[in-house]
Amino acid sequence: MAFLQTYAQRATKHANPAARHLLETISRKQSNLAVSVDVTKSADFLSVIDTVGPYVCLIKTHIDIIEDFEPVLIDRLTALSLKHDFLIFEDRKFADIGNTVALQYSAGVHKIASWAHITNAHPVPGPSVVTGLASVGTPLNRGLLLLAEMSTAGTLARGAYTEDAVRMARANPDFVIGFIAMRRMDGFGVRDGEVQNSEEDFLILTPGVGLDVKGDGLGQQYRTPMEVISQSGCDVIIVGRGVYGNPASLDVDEVRRQADRYRKAGWDAYLDRMKGR
Ligand code: 5BU
Image (cartoon, rainbow, N blue to C red; front, side, top):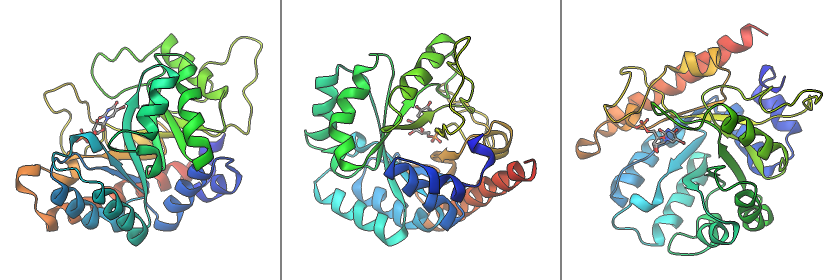
């Protein structure tokens, strides 16, 4: 099983350039922490990213919540990704017909495909959502995550839907690099009489991670890095408010301290998982 190998071992075998880059970065920086920077002002966005940059493998963005967005913000974000050695994941959650998602991914104000190494999509439209995004992303060496599960209470992404999401990924392993999910997807979607390819290696990126609280009063549910990485076998923890706190009163020293704390907690949980090999 892929997840019982080290991140470095998995990097040498992965066929997708974005997945390889992510696994190499995790290994080099000893960080499986992705920080989700959900702030609405460009200056705060850049300040948080410059602060947490040394501690993360990945920065997750919702570029459409930035109120004062200008194209130069992308140049600055890209410069920070090179300065601090992290990848960029735009959490766009595409969910339309193939033609529309290809346009949303490549064009408009944000031109996501030109700068985000990784993006994600809801499986709800069926395989054409992957085909449409792949037509744009594959030539640029990008990777796609499918939302097989969500972290929210009462999510409809469960059971047969999750199984079908995994089958959809298996049909497009060059472009689909993994899932947003709460646990490993190995063995999911395998029908009677089928055998799962033993080389299969889908990355599991997991939001809903917090060390201090269990929820946010709006449906979000938090688990600890130990539960997510060691017990559930996920690969990357995605942490937002646990790191940057309240965007209305950003405290750079505290943001740095929390990023360091979550990086260490995520890495300790990975070492714990590898101990059990
Ligand atoms: P938080 O502040 O750590 O709760 O932020 C979590 C982030 O992850 C936020 O940007 C969400 O949009 C994102 N997220 C999530 O929380 N749960 C999910 O199932 C998915 C994304 Br998909």
